[in-house]
Amino acid sequence: MTETTKKPSVLFVCSKNGGKSQLAAGLMNQLANGTVTVHSAGTKPGTSLNPQSVDSLAELGIDITGEHPKPVTDDVLNAADVVVVLGNEAKVEAPEGKRLEIWNTDEPSERGIEGMERMRLVRDDIKARVRKLYAELTGS
Image (tube, rainbow, N blue to C red; front, side, top):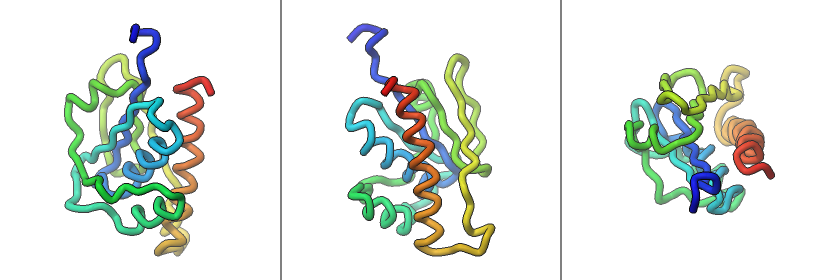
């Protein structure tokens, strides 16, 4: 592969790497089907995935049960072409020359919406953003 045909790489970051960044990674992996390298990480990784995040992706046929929260490392930051920070808790600076996006995602709990209903709304908000990013990365 030449540099011009290099597969784009994206890193999704949230604070615990148990919910939003895992949702985004799962959605991008399904959509890209191997055409984009996808990473997810947390600034303060939790101990497990959010079960509702796992369930909301399972509703779309996406299985992330083998995933686990991972820390943001210099290696993964440097490997990504685009660093996407989800929500307002995580703070990350992208290395020079890397594109940084902040996605202030929908937070239904602020409107009193909880449980799976909340998670579906969060998932669908992230899904729309992932589709847009995928189109930009691949030109499709």
